[in-house]
Image (tube, rainbow, N blue to C red):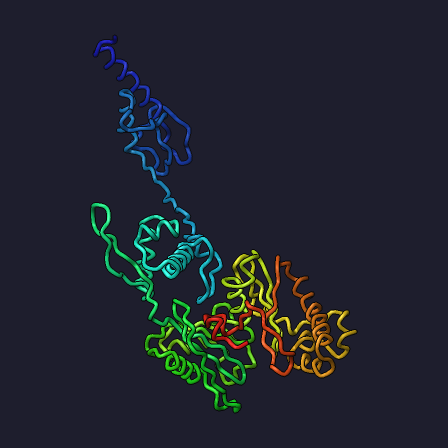
Length: 446
């Protein structure tokens, strides 16, 4: 191992070597090293370090190289300020995605959608099985205890479930019993057309409340959206023996284009003098209740999905035959509305070429199977001949829908004037558009 004197001598020799290397010319433009020049008289525009071999870490500088620091101090080193180019802050991915219009259901798979599904299943379990504890809800619905507690908390806040005592069981706290509130009406379902308004109170138990019918004024100047809906709520509540103040939600079914968001535009000929833009906001601010506006055929499709023929198919199309012609397409439980909410307005479609033999003057499906066309057909034929002729026309009306969409099943519903059809027994699972919002089958007209 080298002695201290030997190491000191080696360090001095390296220092002298560095001094010789740092001597240069002080002449202008002379950047060639020359002996005899002192670093203190070096030009001020020197931009390089005179020492060679800069260490990576200051703490690990080799002993003999520490002497270079006193020579570097005399050199003016200027660092250019570095400008860091910052990328613009990108919003989260969820904000870049296309937002769903307000008033529509949440996208499948989102927490809000899962919570709504769980709440519906939990309320259905209480309605079907009666009062249950949290353990009973977990066994029937198939959820965990924390999820069951959240479900009941949301349903209690919504006013549709209440705590009804406790049950003593295993050691620990007594289990709380939850029950659905069957005596509390939740809303009013309204079916409206150009001449008549039909309304009924809807509760969680599906009680058959009376349907109130109101004839609407024929003069356009006498029509008013807020006044007509408010009167429907009062008349329906009075007929059901309930208080109008307990009504929290109103569902309105009407024919025509309905914006999917519910707050945009409304295109219909059956609601004269009603606002075509911002109708939902107008009604909610005036009535101080939640209001939903939906196409009547879409409401019928929802009823078929929940209670009728739609339960047997993953996808189906519903053909509506009444005074007007419409359709609704259910794709795996989601309604296909189209860009502007008018996907089901098939009455404006041109008739197929095969229909010319049955109705030479028909240009659209409304001319082929609409209310006026059925009345004319009824006047020319009767009995089985009328049924066969109408069936052929309906088959041709289904073709445009089946070509644009390939549902697994299809069904037809609707209402015609009594004089247009022969007397027959209606199908057991028939549901009208306004009734689809919640009016029980026993209270619907045939």
